[in-house]
Length: 313
Length: 270
Image (tube, rainbow over all chains, first blue to last red; front, side, top):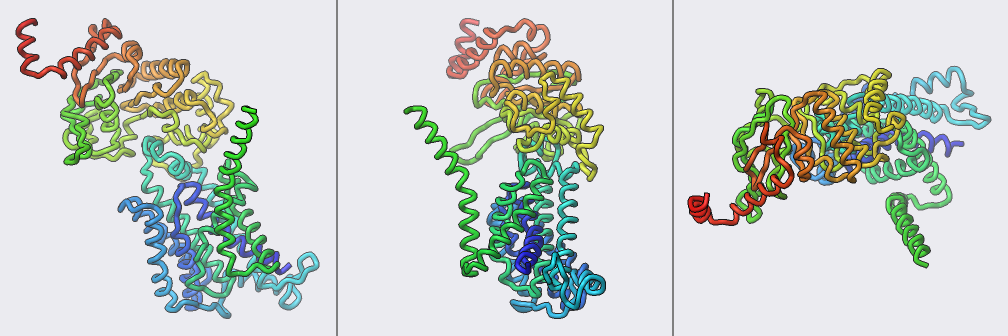
């Protein structure tokens, strides 16, 4: 049960990252690698503010804005200074490594005995629903802290997903979706597509920053290395989500991103439990994304050549 | 009214690939006139249309629409005055979005886009009514991705999107060239219907001589970045396809002769 609760919690936290990656990669069709830096930025800003005694909500909000700023810089580099999208992301990600070290003052900030977003929920559960430090869920005893964090991140994730879905159905959100689909058409409809690209990247990285802030609060620390490979993680989750829910409407795609992240996290947790070396995790993730990107076209061409051979036989 | 004053554009200046695409175009298209631009490949027809749409900056000259100098306006800002239909039927719509969402985008062409729902009930009703008026049977497919439609259907919808809010100028860039003959005829007929009904000022680039003769009020012939001949009024109503082809031949023959020899021949025989 602890494995499931942990996978669910981390899955929900990272689904905010996946939704951010979905906005940049699928909605804007922009390969934004800033994510690897902005998740750490979100974590480090939140961690340092929490250590300094700021309220968890303010610290989390500040982390979200920090992520937004990182995405905004990438967008400006790409649209105003005409730097290639991948290079713009790499520049900001590289710069963020130093920024994150500056923010934290060292490479790792532990969050011991600090108030987190889950603390009010933990107090509520302790008062009304638990026996000591544990809570019974379907007969399983789960630490209150873990259950409180799960409920909190579930609330935040659902609220954010609903907010994004609503936004994407508005006039501005529809224009944002069209910007990735066909920028020429969007300009012909009177939309400044460059501004929307900047706005989209800022929003996407804001979500990633929020994810970083929650991850730091869940893990109990922020580390300067924690962002490595997170973009690929988000991609893997989106690919799984699209297989589960499709991508025909924004609502389905967002549901898919959430489900995909949770499922991927569960698979990873099970693989680790079965003895997968944690050092190999990034390699396995990268191989999974590679296979998911390449397999459909390989299968399609194999099917075509098979049907051609049958026709000529 | 579209007023082009001394438009110049050279691509890749100072390089071996230098192309003088537009060489001092002066053109006045009065309000409510439907003009077609014809010319050989590389004559500058589409470049002129793109210059008006704002796809690139001019080297020299000014573009006025209804008295407003829009030469310095970016492409997206010009969309408040200009509706466009592209040559590629897939260029005017967002393939993965639904018909209704695409049309909802055009309902606010050139206007501020806020946080109101794009497809509220009244918008849906209006979209269904307008799509029904196309007689293509698409009103029941409003929630389908527009990418599932044929090129002709998409081009008809692009035309509807370009004219949803009455544009001060409609630009049609060989918009039937990539369609099969039946769809091309349907879209051409629809174009004429909308332009006549809304009394639009329109500029159409075409390679089809029959279309240039039948549809517009005025024909503008271009060659090597210049306007070489115009047909309007009585002359336009009398002109036939062989006359246009003969005019092209004349332009080409004149180009092949040395100007001094051409002058001599003219004095001798004309």
